Amino acid sequence: MAQAAVESFAMGNGALIAKEEAEMRLVIGVDGSNAARVACDFVANRTWPTGTRATLLAAIEPVIDWSGLAPVTGDVIDEQRSALELVLDERAEMLRRCGLAIETTVEIGDAADRLMVGARERFADLIVVGNRGRGPASSAVLGSVSARLVDHAACPVLVVRSPSASRMLLATDGSHSSRSIPRVLAAWGPAFRGLPTEVVSVASRDGFVTPWSSDDDAPSADLVLHEGIATQVADEMLELGWEAAAVSRAGDPSREIVETGREWGADLIVTGSRGLGTFQRLVRGSVAHDVLLHARSSVLVVRGLVPARHVERAAVLAFGLV
Image 1 (spheres, rainbow, N blue to C red):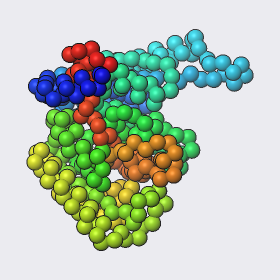
Image 2: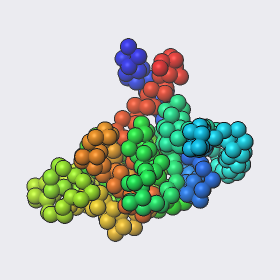
Image 3: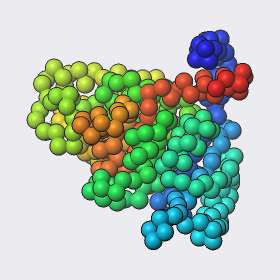
């Protein structure tokens, strides 16, 4: 019932939706690390739509006292909260000077979970986090906040490795998520507009993609298909105001995307996510996940139904739908 109302609202209230799209909601992970500082610097160095609001969220992950098998609370939590609040206040003041409306919050729990819940509750358009740079091996064993967000978050996730961006590589495979990237970036107004962009599409030898996929050449017909996919997306980016060119590659998708980004000099790679379940990711691998682990640049991962979130937010504001 609510979904039908949202769809009806979307069809008849384009002006309000456009107004909603003019404002962004960001959730930024802050933990006192240099990586988190770089993420805040990236946000400060971009131009966001007027009215953009950002929530700086820090999470205190309870430490287990293994002798008593109970979470440590009291003075330890209070000390951590006080330290994080000082960091949040410093970052918030810096971002306010850039014209952003800022709120801060310290929450108890797993950092990735709290960021995803916070983004969902605020109808966030984007989660921004820094990258600790553990490397692929450590991340595979220990996990990482950024990798979990890329795999599970319901909205786009930007993992920042540099405080600025001057060139963008957009990776597309023709899927709904990757084809939505131009529209999503356009809906974000000036945030990423103006970055020279190369669009790449990679023809894999087969559909079974893992980090250990072969570099064998894909059939020429597949390569032609991906040339067409890249060209179509590059043309759409041109129409939306970007300077864009297309290129196609053959081989392992994640490896070719990372290598193309290095050759192009991209300090931002943008790719889609198919939203695979846990079992599918283990069996087939995730291109977005592998790009995140191996790229040296910042990585923005976009999911396909993001524009609908603007519609949902507008409907909630107008009718109180949930």
